[in-house]
Image 1 (cartoon, rainbow, N blue to C red):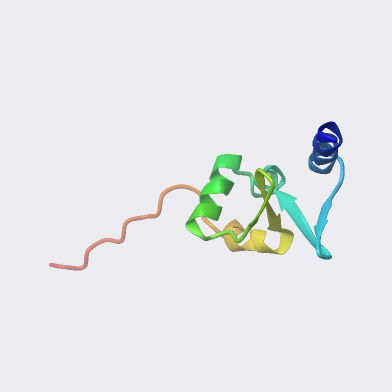
Image 2: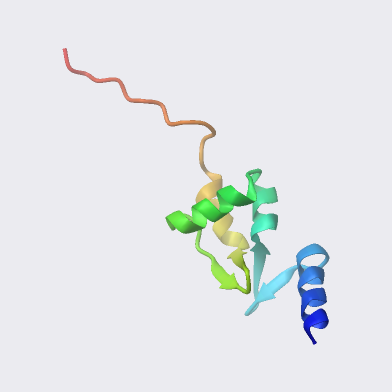
Amino acid sequence: MKCLVNFRIQLDEHFFSLYFIGMKVLTTREASERLNVSVRRVHQFIKQGRLPAAKLGRDYVIQEKDLSLVAERKNGRPVKKESTKE
């Protein structure tokens, strides 16, 4: 039974799209590829509350529509605002 479960998870992650109650969901790896960031960065978005996700086994699943919440960011550090004091 243990082998069947591991095989099914492997198939889901690599070959099939996951659906969770009729909604298209992505693994953290798939989300990182779509956002062009690392898997670690996706985990940071989840931990910060910027990217809603549900824990499924050892990984998280993310609704495809929620990627837009973090996709609208600019690359690099934020620019410091100059002080207007004279």
